Length: 391
Image (cartoon, rainbow, N blue to C red; front, side, top):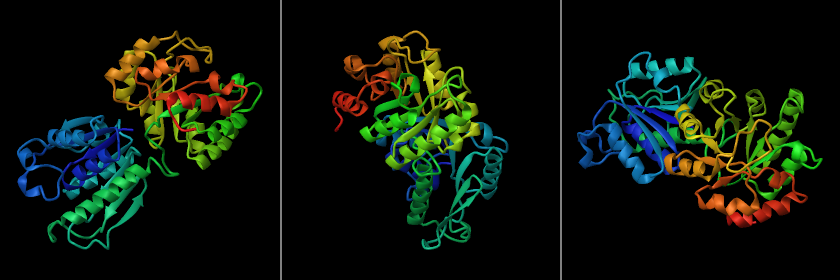
């Protein structure tokens, strides 16, 4: 998920800093102002950056913390009507304006688009005890809701406290029951499919895979094999299994089912709904996108996918509509060109897994190698040994 920050002064720059320290991978900074020495007591800039554009200076500082972070900068004074266009590729937006009219404008515009927003109200003065959080629709607001900057001086510890609370809201949307885990875990990305499961049900296999310690579990079935009702009921049960174990749960293709069962994310193929459309319909979901070429990878990144599938690396028959193998060359391209998290997929087995890992893959998907194994737990242990993970 890309996180947007509108206004990068005391609140905005410190929220960006905390998100970088927390390992957030993608962020968009929008501001038109320059760094001033009088604000250095509460803004995340340095004396030698005075006079520089805030967007460039903050990007430099964030990359010192998190070198792998993808940071988009927009030097622009936001006008009425701009917000929905500027942040249409962001899953959540942080508002850091000083101006009351700008605050009101962005809240109204993004609320009408059902975009999640974290805002601040009442950040002046030294009283820290009255700071609290309110939720209004898709907007979370942090502050004391009364102190005015015209009446009270700004107190750096209070600014830092409010920025930390706002950051927690952003991060919590990626970890609690109301949101999703936005970071793609390293390790085994498991995929379910009864066609290859030796007579076992998806629920039976899911329980074994979760117990054996997969990092992610994706539900992948076709309407030619199961009714939508059956798919929903299975996903509901698998959601409980994965939630109890803290395992990321992704639903392939069926966006409505993913939302109804409170899955962590949805995975889209090239013939499925576009990432941008899914983001508008379900801003809280993690969105993955299968890619088979450099152009598709670039489009997925630009459209705001949280991660991509890179493959099929080798020839595979686990999907009826699978394309030709793209080879290790495409994996090399993804590793060298994009910072976006990815899962290597397609024809990966124990005998070629080390080769895939040697090319930079950290999250890997082995489908029939796991769900078709006579002993799923033992097979996952064997794969974990190759990955160098504890069993």
